[in-house]
Image 1 (tube, chains in turn yellow, brown, cyan, purple):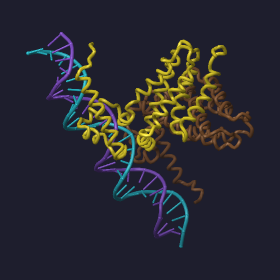
Image 2: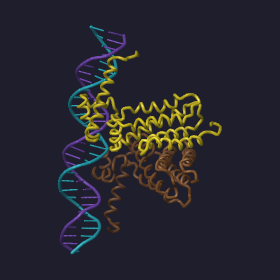
Image 3: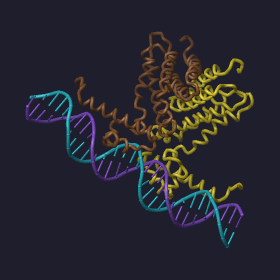
Image 4: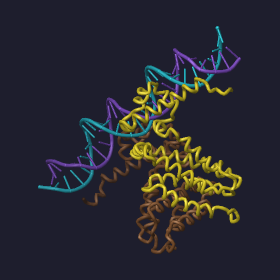
Length: 195
Length: 195
DNA sequence: TTCTAAACCCTAACCGTTAGTGTTACGGTC
DNA sequence: GACCGTAACACTAACGGTTAGGGTTTAGAA
């Protein structure tokens, strides 16, 4: 009921972080498949059940900041200036996310993800979740009057843009190229006088 | 080396079919999660290892006609009349696929899929594979001059259209609505004189 | 202080999946 | 028609992610 910013929460967060850090370190050292949950638990000095109380699956250990990602996308919609158009705001945010993922230090992690079918599959289903929540944000915007289908469609397209650009040889121009397509799609989705 | 349409191949196909039929029946009777691979194997009167020699995973038992789906999409691109435009051809094929999936008899299967996270996840990664092979077909068309990124983008959008329309309250109009958006996206992706 | 419940631990199991090792029987060869 | 290579299948045992069940500690509320 209270603020509960006490020791308990700090300890819990520390445990979670220790597990995530240990897991990522081991995965990068020995390879994702070569490291078992029991290894992670032992190295982080916690029980296997504790790992699963913090993370829903082995794959979730790798995508620890999943929720950040989702929040930034919805924020780009709900937190933009009044009358600021939707698509450019999303383009800007996706560009930032792609830059973040293709930055120097992130390369080994993404190499590991691309090498593991399980991780790729997990990331795909994550993206679908993100698309759904993005679609909800867009649909909730009172300044926009698009159908449910159009909102969900644009949300998917935006998530596709992120995914495709990240894999492209030259990510930043790819964002621009794909967003030109999205912009065109969005314009025909709106009723005539909603320019 | 020869045609090998002999008894061996027929027996193999029969085994595969028996496994698939048994699995689908049990899944629908008792629920996907309530049926184990060992149950399927026992009921189909084969060894567990035989199941996995025919199907790569438990989920693959449900999406038996996966390859049909992929072939139909690429065929819609590679097999269309000369000068027949790309997007309407794809729209036509997606419409047929959506009709097929939303037909009366298919409802219980899709209800089961929607209810199981594992099956949903599997379907998502299947779709990504289909998008990749569709992108390859589009990129290989000598009559089109789009960038690699544009081809991959349009392929994703088309697969999204299938997925979103299938889930929509009214699937067929949804296909039309989404394909209007795709058409607009495709037009800005082409260089100026490729109308 | 006392009580509650959240966080954690341990054990044992479940289930999908695979490796290792045969066994059968089809299909081509002499 | 006997013979051999091998594809298809069987059996066992295990591996690894995941969960249930039940117990212990401790932060924080009463």
